[in-house]
Length: 177
Image (tube, rainbow, N blue to C red):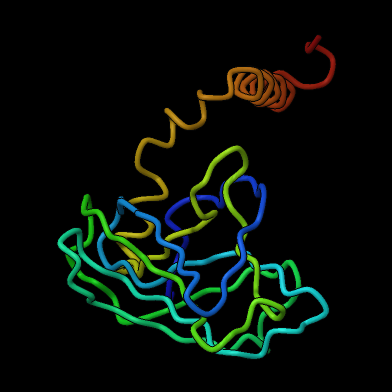
């Protein structure tokens, strides 16, 4: 597995234009090690933008540690695009600032970046590289009962269904409800 999303993308809201000196910044705090990318949703009306888009990742102190560049021609209108880079191994619990720019784009060919609904923050998804298949399986199945019981209606329905099926198999057709 090359990479996985750390969270779901927040609901999309308004957009903000990205061109020339218009730069966007936001902050992420990671819940996993091996931070390896950021996914963003763009509006590229009539696929007009064909210029470079640059994403830079910095530590809290401003030191740039990763960078990724994409061409606007691969960004579909309303498309979700991933900026991938070499993993940052010790990223769990740390905050990073990401800066998005398109220095060679003019205002009339600007890309628009979707913001989170009801917020001024960029609607972004962090990606991480799982250290091994075993750790991924451990993450999936750790606290599975807690996640199962989170939706109480589903849990009750599912447990009743299993109990009924077990009763049918054990006691036969004639003695079940």
